[in-house]
Image 1 (tube, rainbow, N blue to C red):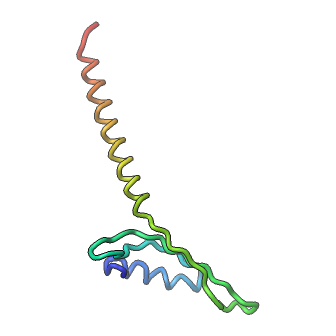
Image 2 (cartoon, rainbow, N blue to C red):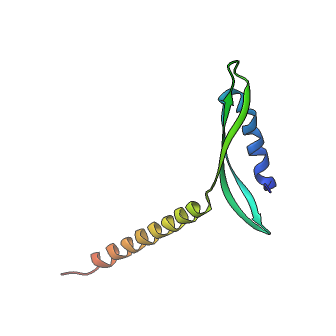
Image 3 (tube, helix red, strand yellow):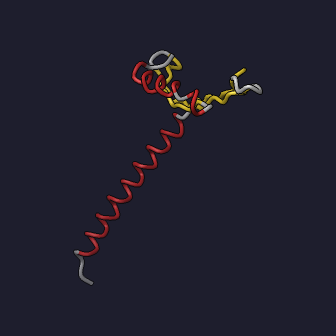
Amino acid sequence: MFTTTDSSRVDARFVLLNTLGCFLADRLVEVQARVDRRFLFRGDPVVDESGKVVKWYGTNTDLEDRRRADDALRQSKQILRTRGRQYSRASSNHDC
C-alpha cells in the first residue's frame, strides 16, 4: 500500500515513462499495519522492433536499513564534531 503523501510525486514520474524509457522512484510502502518502509522502484521496458513496449522488468529495493544507517552515521559525526570542539576549547584554556 502506498502512502498518500508520496502518490503525487510518483504519479508525476509515471508521465516521464514515455520520454525516458524507464521508471525510477522511491516511495513509502506500508508493509505491515502502521509500519512504513521506503522502497526504490525501478522499471525498464522491453521494446519490439517498432519501439512499442511489450513488457516491463522491474525491481523493488528496500531502502529503510540504508536510511537508518545514514541517520546513525550523521548523528555520530555530529557527536564527534561537538566533542572535538569541547576538547579544543578545554585544551586551549589550560596553560602548560
